[in-house]
Image (tube, rainbow over all chains, first blue to last red; front, side):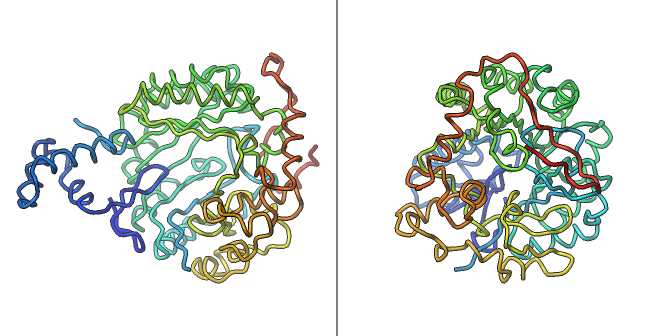
Length: 76
Length: 371
């Protein structure tokens, strides 16, 4: 993850740059190699306690699956 | 409108142990004695980062032909850049691989010429395939992102399934199946490299099936030959709009091939700041935006998507770098591309190696006459 002067937070991949919006940067910050998927989801559920917890779970899963398919991350 | 070069392509040398028939280097290469020093590259990396660059692609020639590649990786990281090494891997022994990874290398792109040694070595003009296989096994043991790149063309596309299987066997996380782009040495060999229409159709089907099967394990990026396309590629994301290339001698270009266009003066980092070259130099402004466009581009609704295609290709075929890219079906010169397709052999069934023009290494002797 990096900070771009004109695009804001970005994730740098081998041949591309992904612009991160909304909770994207926060989700990736939590993916620190020690938290499990469940840890990441519950951390976000408590940070955004007025949002629907099930919606948060689904959106985090969709976001990380998309990144997995781009081979930008791994589930250990 | 302001433009930011998000990636710096650093062509750190034109020297290379391989002689690939589709090398993207210009036919007129830079000699070793003209190459930028380590200190000069370091300055270029920080100037690029100041301009907003996020990524550094170390390429060549073979970037490992320089003795200071590890220092260049370190300098790129120190400037805050994501560092990618684009390499043939030849001669990359374990201690040096370790040093590159400890210097902070983020990603290695290792090139392969084929899945079969005999054909791979024919294309590379030297014995290289076995060394690449051995190196790939070592790379994946390191904590560094790893892409396998295979350049495809008429003579190897029959083995695309085997090439994908090789990538699986080597456990790479990303595979690039890149059709040759016809510039530099590849332009000299274009009639021998251009795939048939059937091969292009098969490629799409094979890659789609492999993507589905390997989802979540391996990402496959695929580049198709633009000669068969209806519309041109958005070359480099537009001239001087998002990418900046510095050649071995420090000359700053909007792409690998731009030096073929006559009448443009490209400035160099020894005499001008990178920011001035990007923002103010005439060459970088020449094809920015759409003021320079002719019809049919000028009134085309696609002009903000593909920027009229590639300026170098326009020049190579029409002798006018401001013309519509001739691969475009709307170009009045499209027949020039159709003629190349019509003149290429209709099948891939030739077992004899064609009469290749091999890339030469830079020397201080003038380039021999080609064609």
